[in-house]
Length: 449
Image 1 (cartoon, rainbow, N blue to C red):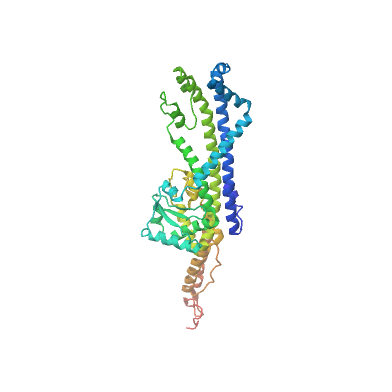
Image 2: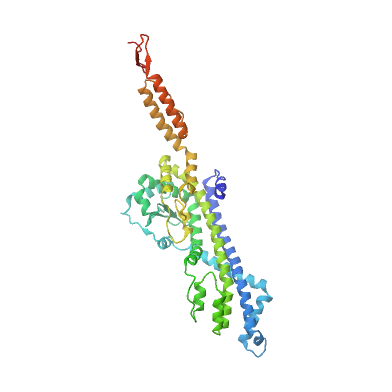
């Protein structure tokens, strides 16, 4: 319902305004990511630091307070006490470190070569002498959209899902990726329709926005997804507490584990293990909340951008019936592409991150929207009906005017068929003045004889 309410706010606007808005969205997303990184660092580090400080004070407090305890013990005591004496300063420093880490992550992910990103997904570059139909379709739509310098390059992804996507960043060469299933099942015109949609999204800046969000959020989602599918019953061996803590990313550390370590007279390791639990739990909570929130916004953005690109791509393709037929065919097929990270799903021609099928698939909203925009189904059906009615009318020696183009329901079509049968019965045979029965004359025929 939320997606439907957002879609209802679609409005007409110049293309340059959408491009500028997408640029602003990328800038705001980057600033928001840095801010969330700072807040997340405070939320994750502060509880763990307080618990660790309590453990240090409890373990070395009496000795460290003695002037003759040594520099190491005194420094540990002062550091642990400073966290409680200056919590605001500690939170500010922690937030600053988190912001720097977030900025470093942005720089790493947004400057990574696009070809390397595709190779990590499993896509392969297509040589110029292979997949000629697909490459020609991409070339035609690139020329139609005016994207010729640089012209998009083609990659293929081995998958049974029928799908395709485009990635781009700044002024770099855009890269188009098609699945093997789409290249086999779609003819040349249908592949042009797919690329027309993707090129329309590229011109509006939606591809750049989706590429940036996917690149930044995919490591976070991969970390969370690997934790959900990993083994929680990892063996704990003496001397490998750090490896265990690193492997159990949620921080789900049980009291029994710490008791076992404490029984081995390793009290400090038990304390550090327990203080890692709040850090891991907070990190996991932040990852879940942020990733789910961004994924929802990514899904809504993909639907709105795709609906607009369907209509704009139809203008590039100049064949509304092929555009609608291709969209229907793609939605009815299996569109799932397993890349390991659902965050990439928003890049695709059809959303590739869920298993929704049938009438519940939100992608059918795109089909309905395109039908409303161009009315292609109604025109095609009315044209076929008009030809059939004229042919039957000529056979009955009575030409009837064709109906006005409009969408008809099955009940209306059935009613019109019954009316046509009644008309045939009434006009096919007439009685002459002499009492004979004969076929009704057609227009222009002589009534004599």
